[in-house]
Image (cartoon, rainbow, N blue to C red; front, side):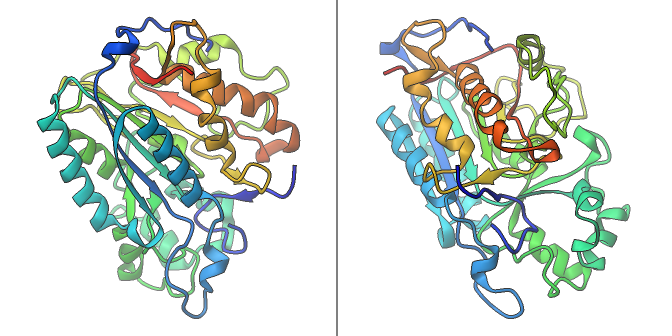
Length: 354
């Protein structure tokens, strides 16, 4: 299948079966809006880190292909890749898409945020060992750096945008340097806040990055799959998946990563390509990241109940099953990964089947 490259922030040398009830006929699917970001080319090249060593290959292609699919499906899409995919731009794009949603149906709309690129969880220093500068470890080991004392594994997760320097760069020597990285990274808390500004009542987050499972709201995820999958002999059962997506929301929970929206008091459905403590890979076979490769197939493959519509959970189930059955044959132990999902019992239509 060719070499696989991890989509993890510090690897500088590499880059349900739930037969959901659907509430809409294909002809009356609510309007859809999306923000799609993909970062392959990172932080401008400067000694001692070469730009190429920190870069990835396919996230920009993933974003372009996902945006094209969403446009084909009738979504109003904002697409940003590489140098255009910055934290400042993301905040502007959320404000812009909020205005578009308000002008075209308000709460009765669908919204998708998609990201492909490097991901990091602050609890991963024990896995990476001495790869991090002392300043980075000290920041997250201190009380001031522990911005998420409760929640999914008590970690704060980050999606690294274009201007985030490599975390393991020797340029990271002080708290100010750490903050400079975080300023160009989207945390789970920040994403939750941005989602809360949107009037849409049907929100979905899709993340193709290492450690992205930590973005799931722990108050609503009954995930019986361990955060480090490691490939159980018995695999992942149907009941595992049903447990993960059919709990009702715990509205009063303070343990959420991507939390409840101010509109409708509902949490976004979050689909992550990997668990909180798992690595994620890309390779040359598909021309996309492995997870996104299968997600792009879902309009044609994921309509499990043959109603002409693909829900968010049907899309998740298809991509997950393909990775568990096909891709994990090429990985061993901690190299295995499995997509995760969170959210409440409410599902919504993502695609029309084709």
